[in-house]
Length: 66
Image (cartoon, rainbow, N blue to C red; front, side, top):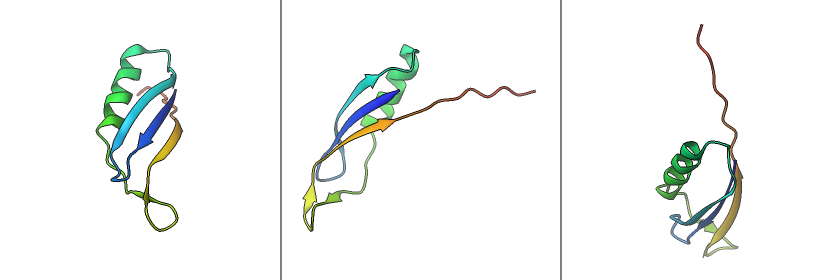
C-alpha cells in the first residue's frame, strides 16, 4: 500500500490519502486511521517549521506460527 500524507507545521497529520491499496479494505482503513492520529516532529526548512508532503510505502506480511 502507498499513502500520501500532508504533515502540518506543528507535526500533526493534516491529510492522509490512500494512493495504492493493500488489497484488503479493512487493512487500508485501519492504516489510514492510524496515521491520521500520528504526531511527528515538525519539519524545518531551512530554519522555520514547514509543511511537508510525503509518499509513504507500507508493506505488510502475515506470519504463521507453527
